[in-house]
Length: 479
Image (cartoon, rainbow, N blue to C red; front, side):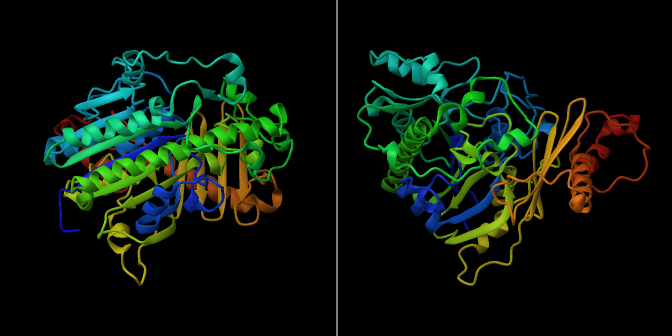
């Protein structure tokens, strides 16, 4: 990879089930542009977000850290410390990148996120640019009705297709590329969809027939025998047991329509880069903040009882023409690995607080016809308040404690649908205890206290700890 300052086009979307893309091969969704991006690039089939909530996962993308480390667990307007590492700010301040954010921000009140150019929505303290666009066009923004909310938040809007969120985001992304001029750029294009409210224009060119939707297999009443990890809100109603299968099919038809619209506008952004002669110098990354049931387990959305694969596995494509791919990786990786990957690619030191691991070796080797010698993680971790999860190649274990302890454990080889909870099965007690120890080790290893007394005995050479010990304040015995 000879160019040490390539452009970075960081395309994200909100709440996308990793199987709801044509190249994934499990759904009937039409995504020809993303299919090509995956086919010609490095495509990771087992990529995981550290959290299934929007804001924590988005902060993790920028920081390369788990939620319990950066401190953002919910969608609240928390004020992150300005000095919190951000890959956008590091590229801007230390490598001279132009940085921009277009679309859904959802980063909280973080003054140090590193973006100078912003055309955003869901950005605390800043204008909702999409709302302002509709008003300027003389259009009335739609507010989701209670009936629509109960019907999975999916509905047809009277807006013409060109005025819906995906085309608007695509057009603003093209403007941002032009605004960057000749500077190398780091541009995050964040599509709102297919997160609810899922609006489909009355004249959308991307329509799906609900009667032709193939629903994933599920076990009726499955959750009656499982611990419930609920979050308050209307999403608790979003399941086929409550609404019936026809309503779920109609919702998925809307969901797929928005994904196809997103795909179409990704194609337009890439075409503009090609026209401007910038595509060959651009690493394109496509991922999502988290997943969605999209009909799996009979559910829709990210209904709060979930610790399962469709909520945490996300698409991940890295495509830099002539430098990556074509290669399909089945190794375990996490989205927190992206920030250190970009650091290593441009020669930035990876900050000691960053907890992800660079994927650069995989990307460099992905274009070799003989494959790669790179091996991903043995385990990945996800979390929510009072809930920690480890996922290995064979097992997923979740441990929940909020006054009493409960857990779930699934054999992913023989029960990929995660329908049989083995946490309390005596026959699998040894596996459970091993996974619990690995989960505990992760929590201890990734904890990064802001104050720390010296003389506490031997501590492994973890980068954040060595960095803390080298600070002048260490001479006083506290940090």
